[in-house]
Length: 165
Image 1 (cartoon, rainbow, N blue to C red):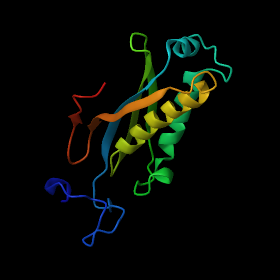
Image 2 (image 1 turned 90 degrees about the horizontal axis):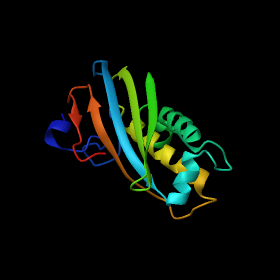
Image 3 (image 1 turned 90 degrees about the vertical axis):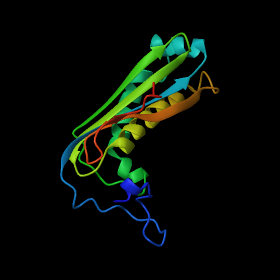
Image 4 (image 1 turned 135 degrees about the vertical axis):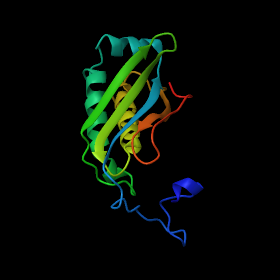
C-alpha cells in the first residue's frame, strides 16, 4: 500500500492526479477531530462574547456554517469522496487571555475512508464565518493553527497530534 511506503496516494504511476479507489476497503467507524483559532482584538472578542455583533450570534452562525461545510467537502476539495457523515460537531472555546476563539470540529461516519478533511473543513469554514461576521468591526483578525487533532478507525488505526490545541 502507498501509505506504508510514505508515497502519495492521489497520484498514479505517471504522477498524474487520481481519486483513490476505496471500494475494496471494509466499512469501519471513523472519527476525526480538528482545531484552529481566530485571534482578534479584545474589544472584538467582547462583542462576540456578549452577542453584540450587528450581524447576529457569531458563534451560532459559525457552528452551522462549519457543519454545512463539512457535508460539502467533496464539492470543494477535488480528490475527496462524497461521504455519508453520521455526525459533525463544531465547538468553540473563548480564550480571553490570548484574545482568541479556539475552534474544534469533529466528523464521524461508518465507511471506507477517513473524515479528516471534513473535520478540517468544518473548522476552516467556522473560522472564516467568524471573520465575516466580525469584519465590520475589525479587519486585522488572524486565522491560523488549523490542524488535525486526532483520528480513529480505518486500517491505520488511531493517532493523536500531540502538538494540537
